[in-house]
Amino acid sequence: MTAAAARVEIAPSVLASDFLHLGDAVRAAETGGADRLHLDVMDGRFVPNISFGSPIVEAIRRHTGMFLEAHLMVVAPEDQVTTFAEAGADLITVHAEVSPHLYRTLQHIHDHGKRAGVAINPATHWHAVEEVLDLADLVLVMTVSPGFGGQEFIGQMLPKIERVRAEIDRRGLDTDIEVDGGINQETVRRVVGAGARVLVAGTSVYGASGGVDEAIRRLRETGSAGLAT
Ligand code: DX5
Ligand code: ZN
Image 1: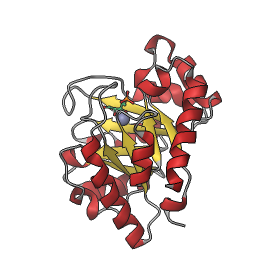
Image 2: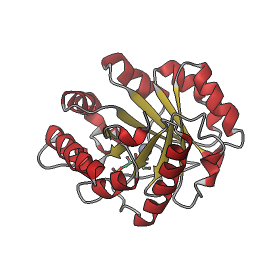
Image 3: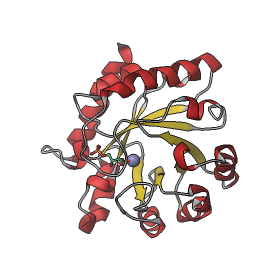
């Protein structure tokens, strides 16, 4: 089965939640039917912001059975793979821009029995992941410049998503395509139409006036409608 035939998955990013009540945010995603939880790790070097590290991932792991994905926005991510694997992440995503030995790093993640993802910034050509498509379980196409939640979706990323989707389908792979940044009711249908299947959403889930459950349900509904188009 190719990923193109798969359903859409919603991955709330706790970055947009109230960190003083992180446990509530995790539970809300779980009871709201999220498919996975997106954990944004920022080091203040690869991106300007510092968010949280492996102790928080470990704490979340102790309290949920949800699939946890660690999006490592850090320099030298290869040095962090073991730490985040031991903290309990199920998927570890590293950025191509800071991974000169990307092939080996993805293998290293697999050696830990984890799923391996590779992310590319808006300014990075999709060719940066072309040679590792067969090895990666997931390609994360950033739809904002990483570092902060609540930014505006960059529409020029849609052709990039389409190109990655075309190549994955051409090779008959089941590599997931994830998008991250500015995903909401307006943009979700466009990214799914372009070929994305895993949708990260921070502000549009945790900042939703109708609550987390409702936001996840609506994103999934609108995204799934985009599958048919
Ligand atoms: C941005 C992070 C995102 C962020 C998305 O650097 O990688 O995961 O939480 O936030 P929204 O959905 O608010 O754009
Ligand atoms: Zn992220």
